[in-house]
Length: 219
Image (cartoon, rainbow, N blue to C red; front, side, top):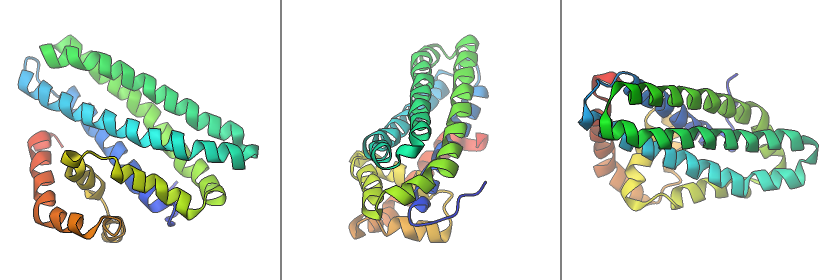
């Protein structure tokens, strides 16, 4: 079911789109990697780590800034909020499995290690898609009813502020890649003017080069 775009949901929809896309791409990269291609294994492994770090960061903000407020203010829906927290724990479990298998494949690029990692990524994707759909369809109405716009926007600000400087263009490019014109204008409006200028002059091309190197014809 499509999410109705509001000041609350627009940024969330864009962030979730990134995780859906990247989870699918990473699974595809691992699934189609050639046995013995150690250079490709290292390249994809680094992308998997970036993805894991981004998802942990996103969920950490929700754990800190959203779920406690909903527990306090939407007590009738405690079971639903508990469900979101449980899904975070399940996702953490899938990521732990991936993080365990990833160095083995990265070091050996062997077929058995690739197959195991691909299976773990597929399991993770299943849990992720369930969680994102539930959050968009069931939880966002609660957020709109129980969090002020200022409280909600704090989540986005903290997300941007805590991105390491050397990874800002990577994060920004990932968010803007599939954005509509309106979404792109909306998101860039939150970026300070010097950052917007650097993105247009340097960042966009840098991101496109990184993605071309990683994805090649596989995307």
